[in-house]
Length: 206
Image (cartoon, rainbow, N blue to C red; front, top):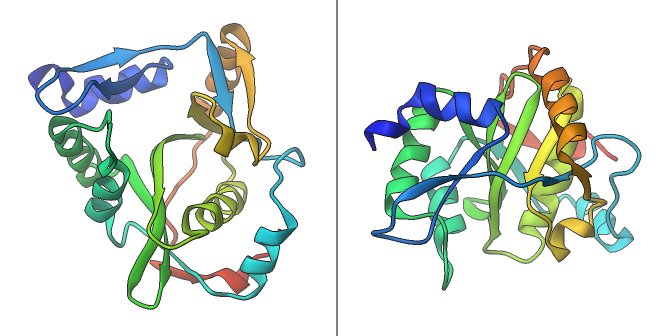
């Protein structure tokens, strides 16, 4: 893992690269896509009315970095995963250094879902997400967008498109457009964590 020290990893992400592995025992490699998927932080962000009803019921509580290792394990716990043991260890080091974060939803003391990401100045890079309780990851997405807006972030990079992201208004842009937005976001100075580790969903509404 020597070639993936904290400094080199953050430098790679600031250039638009991201890390993946083919699985346990396989090397971690840098990847790049010329068609980048973004989650909008403006009025283009959307989600179903049925999800708004779930949010209004205050069934979930939001916490940040309360169970980082559990979120990483949850994201990796699938039949085919690109988050190898080596990459999980690297995420842990990035978290300890203040770069990697988990944005979580809870029901009581049970982790319902979460999003794993890396925050660098004004950009948040969504690495993966998972849920254990239905709607856990969906609510996390809505509340994460609210959090990024409140903190002044200008770019939510989701890397690659999938049907789940499309439901939230995710869109693809070409590499030149992405690099311009990335440069603008990196010129900002944003702080991802909130002062309190726990925030209720009723504090903000979309």
